[in-house]
Image (tube, rainbow, N blue to C red):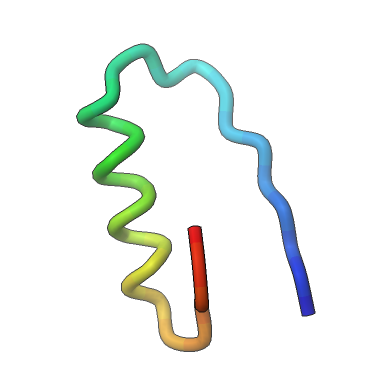
Length: 32
């Protein structure tokens, strides 16, 4: 199953990296 989420309002790459890392840590997530 593929799900896509649009996240807006992040202005720094650090925030993007932190969100991506948290999503990848979720069991069953293959890529973020």
